[in-house]
Amino acid sequence: MDEFAADTKVEWREWGTEAFERAEAEGKPILLALTVQWSPECREMDRKTYGEPRIAANVNDGFVPVRVDADRHPRVRERYNMGGFPSTVFLTPSGEVLSGATYLGPAGFRGILDSVRESWDAKGEAAGSVPRALQTEAPPGGEVTSRIEEEMIEQLLAAYDGDYGGWGSDVKFPLPRTVEFALVRARDQATRTLEAIRTHLRDTYDGGFFRYATGRDWSDARREKLLDENAAVMRAFAHGYRYTGEETYREVAEGALEYLTTTLWTSGARSAPETASGDEPRAAGDAFAASQAGDDDYYRMEATEREGADPPHVDGTVLADRNGLAVDALATYAAYTDDERASRYAERARDHLREHLIDDGVVTHYVDGEETGPSGLLLDQARVLQGLTTSWQVLGDGDPAEAIADWTIEHLQEDSGAFTDGPAEGPGLCDRTQYPLDTTVEMADALLDLAALTGADRYREAARDAVASFAGASDRMGVEVAGYATAAARVLEPHVLRVGEPAGSDLHRAALRLADHETTVVPDADCDGAELLVDGEREAAADSPAGLEDALTGE
Image 1 (tube, rainbow, N blue to C red):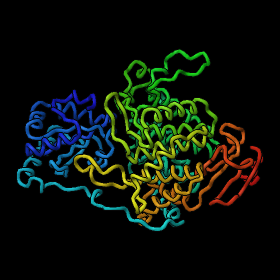
Image 2 (cartoon, rainbow, N blue to C red):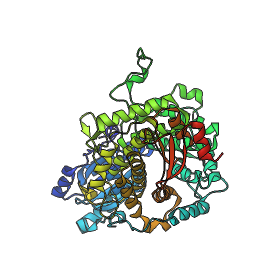
Image 3 (tube, one colour):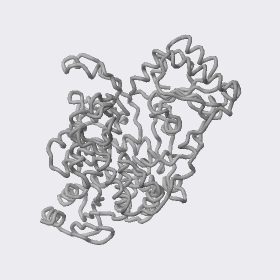
Image 4 (cartoon, one colour):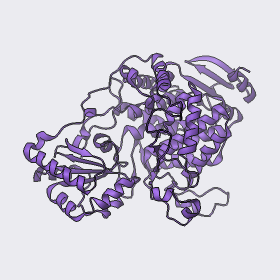
């Protein structure tokens, strides 16, 4: 149970079979409160609605109230999210949805309580329904062709906002993977969007990036800062620096590195004395925190006022998926800049994942004292694998990437090639299967890197099958999933830069800086010098950094 439950007067229960069994035994609906620690609306609803004694008494008497931290329980979140947080969802004892909303003040909440009770009294279980996303048996498969990439380029051109940058005509999200797709296909769109993010979503005082802007012109930013989103945006700026050489982009990425390794770093060792060697001491908790809350009052303060104010709450939960993305982002930045701090923190977070959250290829979402989160979720498997394969390319060590990939393919990939979001088990609708596109793309990307790093074709075939499992819907995909087109292009024509020297050598470091960001760099490969393979065919070769630059740039 999250620490903010104490701000309410509701007798909350944990998510689990016991709550559903009680609802069945007592003939009551379930009130599911999906909350996150970074949302100011969640805190407001706790105080104003769930903290109101008469409402709380009504809930305690007529419902089985269940409270879930949506960041800690992704499969519950994806099945019951009403479009934002808090999500207020009323369920039958079997887990089907009676009604739902996001934030509700006292008046609105009383109204929906009466409505749900009337519906339940009249129809019982028959009043429930299953969300449409859970009614589809499998995604529409098809053939992976070059047309997928072409269609996404057309979508970029159609959706781009020429006045303000970014894509779309209302709310503006940073869409870092879309930026990365555009960097090699529509660079002006990518760089103008990076400029908009730098100008409007970056916290120039405390560091980090805000989540999104509610105005088309990037105004009215939502002030929450999530680790996964910050890591992804940091990586996009690092790639922007690689393609343009623009020093501003490097500085923005460096600022993100500073935020991640200070505000969101969970280790107490940060303030401990240095060791005799000058290295920072290592602690068992070395990893990144999940998020920092949004607080408009705080962020509207002048810099001098912020110095004396308490900063917004940081959720110190170490989530496997978000730390995998952080390792990926820091290693990417280190690849282009040789930044030792980025390398060091990437190693420390990677080692924490290995020691505490990975066991025989199975990734656990989080461990907090005696509380252990769900294991074997595609979200964690894919993002941790991506962090490990990027770390392997940059730092030269990818263990246990193969074990994670093998377990995921065996347990979560169906005969159709589609990946499920996790084991189909648990109360409510968690025993129903979902096929998440975004996470499938992340898994396919990581598998393509792993195929190049290990030389094992089975990983490339698994990636191809995963991309193909959604190909029948490629003509209906919007720019927010441009990463799917990237994965399709990589499946069709993989680029691999093999370096016959260990990680950290001059030739390897040159390869990292020169390679296209969709190319896998393989250190310590069985070859002389360096060689670029395109779909398995040797396209260029060199035995020195200068020679490699000439070979790859054509100069």
